[in-house]
Amino acid sequence: MPATASVSHRAPRRRPPVGRAVAVLVLVAVAALIPLLGPSVALRDTGEARAPGTGGITFLRAVVFAALCVQLGEVFATRLARRVPGAPLHRAPRGWAAYAAWAGCAAALGLATVVANGNLVPQRLADLDIGRLYDSRDGWLALLEVNAFIAAALCARSRRPSAGALPLAAVILAEALRAHPPVEDSALVGSGLTLVHLTCGALWAGGLLHVLRMLRRWRTTSPEEGLAVLGLYARVAAVLFAAITVTGCFSTLRRMPPGTVMDQLTETAYGRTLLAKVLVVAVVAVLALLARQRLRGTGAPLRAYVPARGEVAALGVVVALSALLTAVPVPIRW
Image (cartoon, rainbow, N blue to C red; front, side):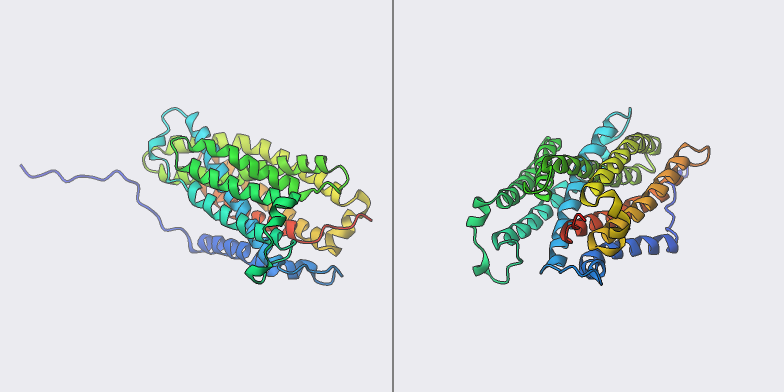
């Protein structure tokens, strides 16, 4: 008897439209250019002085934030997937947490050298005073971030990678305390708002990234389970977005009193950066709503993957703008 030809049941892979690929590349390019050009654009004609090394600090801070997003997102998305019956966790995408942790460690170490030089970018090795890292609050926080990222990298390679959430929580706490020094009015309130804002933002961006990686990995073998994970994420993301919005509004009013907000949004570097971030977040929200509508629609729910992918790319721009927001001068309370 003639041999029966084997028939493949794998769905054919379609090439993504050129326009969609170009749009993603543009968003990635914008995120990469923000540390390079962002400080100059934000400070132009504001009368505010630009601190030396603002672009480099913005880049390092962006790497720290991105590392947090990737690692927390993997832990978050994996826990969501465990709630879906039949989800093939043994075929989950390869983790990026360890690579992200070492990248975050390198960036945190770079920021620690700035603290060791009196919050100035060092020009040579002799500029560093290691004693400043042990004798100052900023130095302790910088060292805490470096060591926490090392611990997170080790956890990522262990049998319980979810344990990395604990050292990552220490990084977020250090960032919240660093952003609000004790000389600031109601510094603990500001640190609390930043703690919630940064945690929810990292879970939102990083969780979506890993969920989409799962959906892509399972698109031919377990598409229903992948969509179920995306649906769970969408419900939690709505709560995360609400928390981000509330904490962001209160943090803005702490930096800029209500009567000065409109003026400072256009006349200060902090306000311009914040305005750009709000506009991009609005685009992200529209893409998230579109993805949710497609996910619940009667048509092919896999169409939700397209706006969700645009959403995660736009969130990369938000991460870069958030890093720039920490590097530009804090507005004066008029």
